[in-house]
Image 1: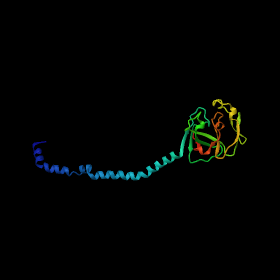
Image 2: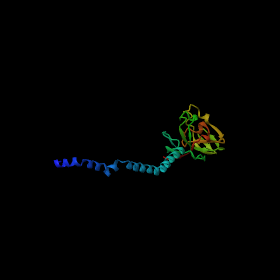
Image 3: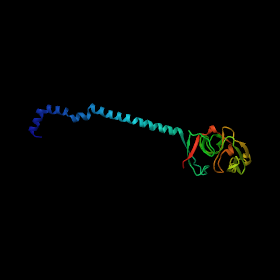
Image 4: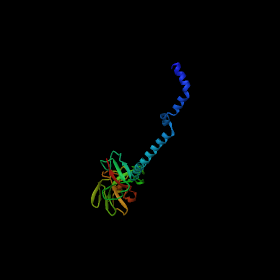
Length: 203
C-alpha cells in the first residue's frame, strides 16, 4: 500500500467500516433470520417423518409381541431336519400333527432348563386312545413312535412307561418324530394351557 493509499484509508475509514457492517452477505450468514429458517426446516422434516417412525415402531412391537423364535441346537433333532422355528403366539389352534411351542417346565428338567422353549408335534387330542408299548406307541391304533430309548438314561426300566390311557379334556399328547425324543411317552399329556402357540419350521 502506497502513502497516498494509506492517507485515503485513514481519511475514509469510517465509511469503510460502516459499509462492512452493512454487508448483506455477512449479515445473512450469521443473522437470526437464517437460524429460524434452519430450525423451521428441521421441524417440518420431523413432522413429515413422525407418522412413518411411529408406524415402524408399532410394527416392531407387534412382531416382537406376537412371534417367538425357537432354536433346536441339539445334534439329534426331534423334528429333523429343522433347526429354526417361528412360534405364533396368536395362533393357538390345536390340530392333529401340527407343531406347537411350549416352555419345558419342571417335567422336562432332566434334559431341558424349565424356561427353555421346546417344539414338538401334537399327535394326540382330547379323547384319543393312547397305547405306549416297549417297542411302539399308538394313537387310535396308528403307530406314531417307536421304542422307549430314554428309559435307561432316566434310570428306570422301560416297563415303567408302558401304559394305556385316554387323553383328558384340556390336554394334548405331544411327541417328536424320532425314537429318542423326550416327550409325552415319558411325562404324559400336556395341558393345552401350557402351549405358547403354533410353530412353523423355517430352516
